[in-house]
View 1: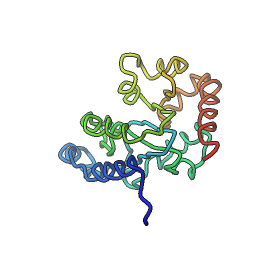
View 2: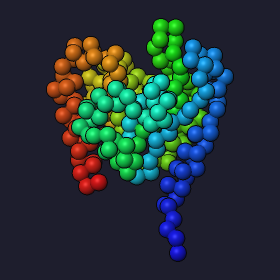
View 3: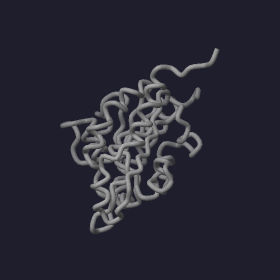
Length: 208
């Protein structure tokens, strides 16, 4: 008698395969400065208690095929108080960006916003396939507006009001180096929010 995966994991495996095969944005990406082909980077989990909801993969993640495998990921892991091994353990952490592919660069060399069609096509299905999530980290404005709706203001206002977020949700700024100035101007983030973030992460991962 062979072991079988739980139904949620079977559904997730099929969904992950469908996402990896997605080419909805092929023409859009071909028209960007990088003229790249789609490379969806799903990192979903039916067992992880923590879900990281970011914006979209950057160029390095596009090339490496693993979410947050860059300097922003290093900062995020420091914020969470975990190492790379823990972050990439799908029994512990799942990652669901607002778009699964690198969207390309604008004229100034900054990442383009995630195409809304990606979330429209995949997001609710992906969330439904991850029933074990107890803590959702909303990184940046795109994720905050999708999950919080009208309750989301600017990123600064939403993060500063983290205590008013729904149960099991923490809003965060993007860990990009571009936000280093924001972090310096808002010392409360490191003094007040990060200890709470690390405590929640530690409690959820304690027995895993």
